[in-house]
Image (cartoon, rainbow, N blue to C red):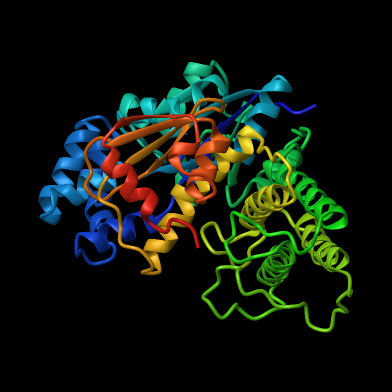
Length: 445
C-alpha cells in the first residue's frame, strides 16, 4: 500500500500549455526581433517581483511594454491563449475518483485564479497554490512547505511533478517523491512505480476511438452513396474526389507519425498525401480509403500521446496527429453525408475542440508560414452547448472586439467555411466588422 495521499501538479507546461507561435506572430506584427518580449518578461528581478506578488500582472505587462518600447505588443502578449491539457486533466479526475487529493503549485501571478477558472480547474482539484500568494517561488523549499502545511501532510505523502527539473529541488529536500514531467504517459508510469495506479481513460485514446467512428461513417457513405455526387461544401469535387483527398491525407499523416514518408510538397499541410511505399492499393474506392485509415489508426494506437514525431503544430507528438486527424475526418464526414442528402451532425465537445484547434493552432500556423497577415482584433467564440470558449487573439491587445455565441457545431462549420453566419443561429456582441475580417481570413490550410 502506497504512503502517497496527494499528487501535486505544476501548472504551466503540465496542466496547461502556451504556444510559441502566438508570441512569434505578435513580434512579427510589431516588427520586434524574435524572443524580444519573453527575454524581458522573464528576466530577473522582474519575473521574481510578479511571481511573488510584489507587483501585479497588469504592472508586469506594463513594464514589459515600456522596456521593449511597444506597449501594444506587450498587451497582445499578455492576452495570448493557452490550451488545457485534456489528458492530464483526465488523470487528475481519475486520481480524485480514486480518493487521492490533487493540487496545483505554480510560480504564478495574480492573474492565475481568473485564468484557471476559464477551464474549471478549481472544480477538478482540491487546491490551487500560487507563488504570488505564498510569497515564495519554486524551487524554494518554503513554497513546498506552505503546501504541505495547508494539506496537513508530510513530504513523503505528496507526489510532485513539474516540467522543470530545476524546480523539483525544494520538494526533494522535504522528502517528496518527484517526477520530471515530459508527457502524461511518463507521469502515469511514474505514479504506478510509486504505488498509484488509475484507470487510463486518456484523451488520446478517446480521440482515436472517435476518429475510428468517423472513419466508419465515411466508409459507410462510400459503400452506399453515389461516387459521382457533387460535394456542395467542396466546390468542384465529387464524392470520389473527397474520398481520394481524405485517403491521401491519412497516408500523409501516417508518414509524419512514423517517419516513413517524405514531407508533402506544399509544406506539411497534409493535403498532398502519398501512398505508403510498397503498399498494394485496393482498386475499390471504399477499400482503398479503409486500408489507409486502418494503417493510420493502428499506428496511433501503437504509440502513447507523447511519442515524438513531426507534426504541423505543437506539440510535435502522436497526440497532435490523433487530434488533427479526428477533426480532418470529422469535417469531411460532414461533407460526404451532406453530398448524399444526409443530415450530418457534429458532437458538441468534439466540435468545440475543433474550434479551439482552428483559432489556437491552425490560424497561428497560417500566420507563422506567412500565408495570412495577423489579425489586429481579438475574437471570442463562446459555446452555447459545451464548456468554456475559444479565443482568436489579435495583435492589438485590449479587450476582445467581438464575441460570437452559438452551438459548437455551427461555430466550427462557420470557421471551416461550411456555413455562412446568416445560415446559423448565433449571437454577435461587439464589432461585426472585426468578425467579418476574421472570417474572411484563411484561418485553416
